[in-house]
Image (cartoon, rainbow, N blue to C red; front, side, top):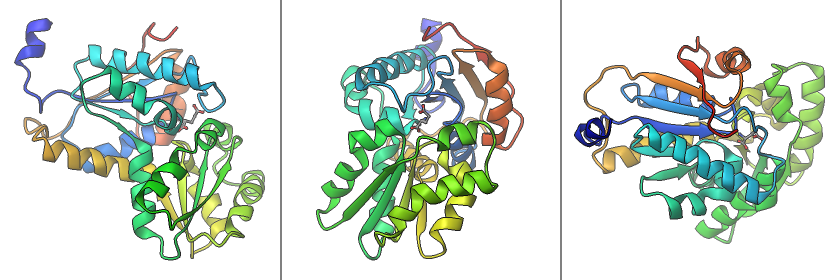
Length: 276
Ligand code: DGL
């Protein structure tokens, strides 16, 4: 095993992706679109989801353990697909590990600041993400002229997990979260949570045509591609990558919901004792 690791060139090693559960598959979907030749190892911490309501210390601890699990699989790069983990634990992760680690906050913030015309940006996310102010800090780091308006949307994750992706109840909840942001005159809204791209339809019904929705899954996949190219770490040995999924609790729920997130059948889902 050790010898195989040494012999594998940088490029042919898999990309590691972790999330608190199934939501990070929205990022995998984009990675497959933009980097179809890459192998992917995914870890969903389904035994400990949701992260969005947990303490900072717990989120950092879980994130470090998730990275350790992926590194056992010899990944060349780690994507913290979870916005909550990216908001709270990126510094700790980078301090602890040598492989490149990308979080979703910077790429989402970068895209929003380059697209807004009136410099008024909305951010929605889990309670922990919004409480961390990670998006606001990242946006203001680019330029203090931006005005950022944030809103936590705790009911969106269970709605997405239950497959309530549209319909009256979902639209009513979306309205109560999004209408106050809309009234601030934002022209750009960051969907700062893995699950929210699934709710794009009801969200867009409230925001209307004049507010751009930033899907952090699309922007992080773009950042991964740019980094791999720059570091000459693209996988040139394959036409189509292999995907392996690991979860810390029963795989069936992950498989059923995951197929909605990924839009195709999920094979190779295995339970690991990691994390519990
Ligand atoms: N993956 C989380 C995020 O993107 C949402 C689910 C959770 O709370 O763990 O913030």
